[in-house]
Length: 225
Image 1 (cartoon, rainbow, N blue to C red):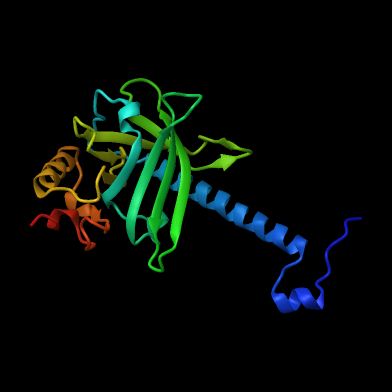
Image 2 (image 1 turned 60 degrees about the vertical axis):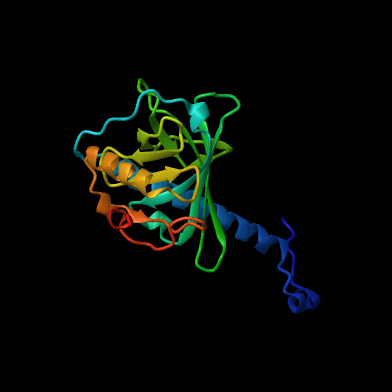
């Protein structure tokens, strides 16, 4: 029979929790993370079941050049980013064992200043072009599982990899990324044109406030001076 820690008066006064309670809290947090990953993966996977205007991933695409840190300039809002109010960015690192796989660290800031991270992995979806990836945030038993992987297509890309547009074939999801928090107006105008060319309504995208960049949430189509 396992011995469970019984709270002592000193533990109660100091706010310390018994070991069993701490373990239970950690397991609860882990279940919530897994549940969130499953919900996110299922939502995006189901989103891919829809049909939309033809979308074309870019060619060529070099995962080594694509790696690094990207700032989110704008995105189509969805519930899994509902707590993110500013300074959303993604850091992509090539996986040591699979040169075409990309490890993902997404981070954003809540309105109270707290940071939120989401870790995941991307890999080629199979077949050309290389810019057609699939992404998962579900990690079980120290391995990323692609059971509910969702489409991540790079559909517009600066030749020098200074900015990128990521789309989804359903047109329900989309992100505008840049290496720097601030994007020049003429570059933003080009990005908006590329978004429209891929069948999106640029007004679906909402500006992500960035320190040093655009600071007001508004439709991307209204962001040009």
